[in-house]
Every structure is written in structure tokens, then in C-alpha cells.
Length: 233
Image: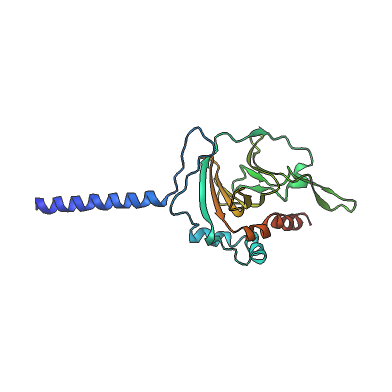
């Protein structure tokens, strides 16, 4: 009996250790230190089937597949993650007409505690002579902000020049959002279709990319125009 018990104990311990090792390999790690952009890449970095099913319900997905027929969320891979401890934070004091002009474009979290401002930095929205809302580009740069109405503050999540874009945003739940667009990596890989997942409480980014420059060039800035036209009509 003692030998049997000892044998079972050893086997159980080995199985637990093996499972823990497997889990550690599958989970992309995040390094928490003084740096704002420590890149860490894991092994199991594809979207889950459930996540892909969710993304496929977005209007962006249907549009992307028309523009780039090879577009497929299963081709995206996580290329890095970082802790953003020092996001640029400023006060949020909107003009009297801000919500009338941009209300249809901002993306509220499920609990309405935050909203994503995709457009106000680079787009002027106002009524034309016929009383219809129109958007006019203010420049080629893109700033994406996360606004906290209760504290009247906003944090800059991403800022890009004309070589990259953020074309849409979506809340997975009250704590996690995704930003969808194209990133210019500025190296031999060129542009890539990109999705940034951001965890609000943990201030952590996870970057997923599909490194197909031809497809990225077909997608950059295109869905944003469609989204704006649909929202402002």
C-alpha cells in the first residue's frame, strides 16, 4: 500500500507540473516594469474560435473581405504586448456642440463608464447649408482617445501619422476594447492589418497583426470613410 501510494503521488505531481508548463507556454506574458513598450511574444497567439466568430459579426469584417478577399481573422497573430503606465492624459472639456456633432461616432463601453473617441482629433463635424452633418478632414494624423466622463479626463491610446490608421473600435466587455486598422511597421515587413486589444483596468495592450502588405494597402483608411458616411447620413 505504501509503495502504491508513493507511486500515485509521484505520477500526480508530474502531471500537475506538465500541465502548468503547457499553460505557461500558451499564455502570452506581459512584463510589468518601468518601460512603456516592452515587447513580449508568446507561442499560442491566434484568436480563439469564439473571438473570431464575434469579429465576423462586425460590419468592418464584411467590408474588409470585399476589399481584400484573403482577409481572415484566423491569419492574425499576436506580435507583442506592453504595459502602458504613462499614457498622455489631458482634461476633457467638450464644447457645447460636441455630443451633437460626434455623438454618433463615439463608442461607449457597455456600462457607459468610458467611451472611445476615434474621430474628433482629425475630423471636423458640422452641419452644412441644408442642415445635414458633414465631416471635413483636419489633417493626416490620427489620435485615438479613451474618455472618462466622470473624471473629465481623456487618455491617448494611440497616435499615428498618415502611414497607419485606426478605422473602427469595438468593446468586448466593459474592461476590454479593440481598435482595428493598419500599422506601418517601418521595416522590411511594411504595412500590416492590425488589431490592438486594450485592457482598461490593467492598462495593457496586445497587438495582433496580419502581415500582408498588399491587403493592408487595400484596407488603410477605407473603412473609416464608410463608417463616417453611414453614421452621419
